[in-house]
Amino acid sequence: MVDFSMVFPAGFLWGTATAAHQVEGGSPPNNWTRWEEAGRVFRQQRAGLACDWWGGRYAEDFERAAELHNNAHRFSVEWSRVEPEPGRYDDAALQHYADMVSALHARGLAPLITLHHFSNPLWIEDQGGWTNPATIGHFERFVQRVVEALGGGVSTWCTINEPMVYATQGYLFGYFPPGARSFGQTIRVAENLLRAHAAAYHAIKALQPDAQVGLAKHQIALKPGFPALVHRRALNIVDNFFNRAFVHALTTGTLRFPSRTVSVPEARDTLDWIGLNYYYRFRVTFNLLAPRQLFLRQARPRDGIPGPGDTGEIWPEGLFGEIKRLFEMTGKPLYITENGVPDIDDSIRPLALIRSLRSVWQAINHNYPVRGYFFWSLVDNFEWAEGYDPRFRFGLYGCDAETQQRVKRRSADLYGEIGAANALTAEMVRRYVPGQAEALFPGVKVKSSVELPQP
Ligand code: GCO
Image 1 (cartoon, rainbow, N blue to C red):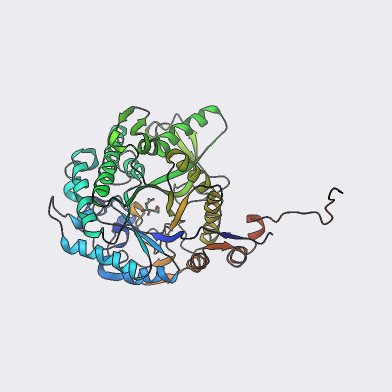
Image 2 (tube, rainbow, N blue to C red):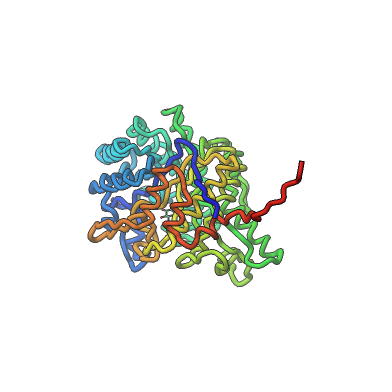
């Protein structure tokens, strides 16, 4: 095996990512508390105390992040806390978020703040949520209030987390609140989220001209389930709809879906950076028996590590291709704003992390400007419709929502060593994934007697 050190650029951000409803606990009424009360989460679970960050435990977890030699953290602001009623802003909630930002700075962690991560106040939900264009203006005013309150300590903002996941899970597949199953509503929600991103971008820039504003885009790697043309055509439909259309609109101002093209000129060139959330690869087949899934079915994984439930396969090498595509589509710097694996016993996470970072390092060495990596996640947390399903534990630290006990996983040590060295070394690979090193980094098979041409 070739000895190596994959050194990352000076100033590279090493962090973790979280989201308000998943870690804070004691959530005020929002679209997710309503969904939980309706019994729509795994085993009718509720987020409950989660990781008790609203109770102050964010400080101990930020301490853990600092011990892992992280220099950044991404968290989201909960709209239902900041604006529980239209136009009434809760200064105590804003102060709590300002305290969180200060706690990050005090530990040498740069904040990257997400302004919308799947949750809405009930008063927004009750007026049609993101199907209602009026939500765009409400979101813009909420963003202005947050930036005024936190802008002194934050310069990197993520407007919206995973707009196409939010639109499809909530309005096409009915897996997230409000549980609709309408292609037309899905398209409308995506369009309104695009307009909201643009409004937020311009509002932030007006308040903080030097702010760096982006969006976290979930990308899925795809491969045809079978070689026949019909399956490749099916893949292309999924790829454009889920992966490419929204990103294309962020640079061109035109949102092109199969059934509708809409011009959103205010969205044109509204990225200072693009965030990549990457987890799984899906095999796509065309299936006449699946009209409700637009005749598209996911075939069982073959060569990746099967993910839990009906997720795709864990294929860390997909990061390179998605980094490449996002840069080619946007021309902007990137952050890996989420990447991780569900793995309660930490049996595959060290290998997946090493393979993911190898892929990111390869992209950087092809001159794709990746500026940082935010691992999902620092602590186990409430995994949306999967709740606290033991198959969906993503933390570097285990966290028991009942006892609030944290248990460090070995991957945390690995991630800490990488952050301290700003590099992934052969020595780390040998220690954390013994027996995998040769397959991961095959040595150069040089013949002992290399015949060199005589002068
Ligand atoms: C997402 C969300 C996160 C998830 C994480 C693990 O991508 O769905 O941004 O909130 O919890 O990705 O699935």
